[in-house]
View (cartoon, rainbow, N blue to C red):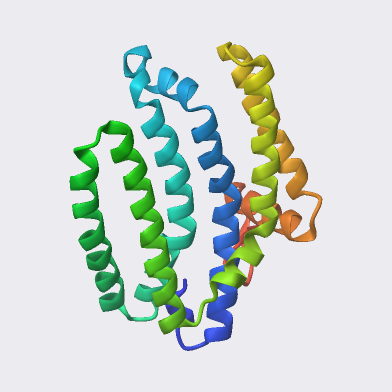
Length: 220
């Protein structure tokens, strides 16, 4: 869809920010919930013998949610604009930083390795954001502005989850209830803003059957 708009930068930017908001709405709370409820999720997914991997599951979830929104979308923008070499250069630069970083981090233990890996993914975001501004004039400040509703809602839902874990933690059932309540808080906060309502409607239209509107979004 983006490649069809490569010669219309204004429409390209609008479409880019629109879909970035839709994806951010979905992945931000999931990434944070993976971090906060990492022990329960690891237990349910892998069993209690993998409890030591909980820190990896949580940090991976949070870093992946940020990477999807702020890095992967940049790579798609490069390819859509006919700039695959820029995407390739970005990946090579990231690997040149990641490989030696992980090599040295592995010598300091598992937890250090997990944290350093997450930090290198933040470096990948920085690389892609610099390049996407250079070649596509996509502003990081405008990206954050468009995602501010979902970032704020994620913070509030995370505080709800932290309160539940602190005062009512220790029980899988209570943690599941806390997770559901936290996600309810997230949706509720998002619905308080016009931008949030619009994105919720767009995401719902994509999920539910219907027809596509002029933006390529499915609607009733």
